[in-house]
Length: 584
Image (cartoon, rainbow, N blue to C red; front, side, top):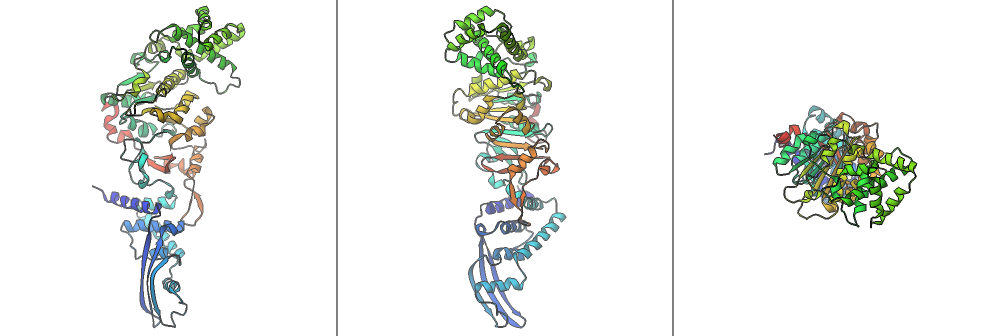
């Protein structure tokens, strides 16, 4: 059952649908018959004006007037209505008849001048009636500031027409879909969901509620496989139990907490065939080595990556998937069993391996020492007994995430202070799952695999993520990235704007003025023509976006609809999420 506010809101949405589509028109009847200065004047007319033919300012005033009519505050007898339909002579005259005594109607020569006479008699012009109407709006909104009607009217006067209305929420953004929850439509209270192909990004500073409003609600209802980069461990604690009890096997990869971690051996994914051994090894090496964006000379990193590639290829050539060990890769990089390593490379039928063997053997001792030191430093995170225990085997395979029945959830967890020293591990696990899932098109019945990647810039430049944004939808991959600011992403990705643009949905919370994020959003929202004076103004100024007006709001952009203004719906205060948190 609708409350009064819900009922009014629904009627206002219908008004918006009509005006946004510029559909239809409005009719105004004139029945003037009276004595004027002792003489007779009579005018009967029917006027019509199409919405599509009205100037934006007049059409917007008529929209606001229609709001008040639908809310039961005003009626069509108001002078503003007649003035806007007539439009100082711009309306279509459907029928008209008039009769004036000579003294009164000296200026009347035809239908139009007869109607002009009536409006002049009542001192009704578009400008005068709009001015009176705006004064009425000012009094009403001050007297009833907390009403749905006042909020909607003020939003329109301040550029609200730029924002998506409830009637826009169709197709991939239908509230009735099983799509990802983005937020709650600010004026209608309707959930805004995204069920389309393509990936998402949310840019929000710490403490702005992105985990509570977007991450947790979705993991507490998502019906497919999920891979979650959980840099604080709080997402696992809040959602893992419900997902496990709902039939989604849960794995946790916590490299510094082996007692509570499942195992994953990245070497197990390497294919030991002439076609793929070197290629797979090179890909893994590129993720093991975190690029140093401050380096002006990539020579040492490139050579170190070549050496790591060769070490991985040699280990995977000599051992089956179950026997491979990162410890052996590290041994080679510390020149343990060095002669065997060089011999395996040189004897390989894979020419890239053979060439690598000769190249490494022919390095000068000084160059080799520098390359070895760079490679050892890059893989330092993989040393130590705790890490060795969680990479000694594999409790799941990448292919498990494409199952149609009981698809799993993987949480990749580290504590905040451990991210930078151990991001090599995070990069590898995320990248190998992305690459593995993009190796073949899944069964059409399999739900998408959702990657929720918190603090994604801290992984460093990740080409597999860029590739997933571009083509992942073909392989049933949906990536949702989270970052603190635009600056974070631009520091890591040379084509940051292209990366963001490849996301079908972009969300922003509490943007900062200082790093340019608020200015970027303001420019993206664009301009609107003020219904007050016709001037061009920004839909939202940067200081407003960063201020209290938008504190509890999410601004969303999509390639297929007007910008979204959404309220944050926190999991801890909303059912059914509140009950599901921490397993109930």
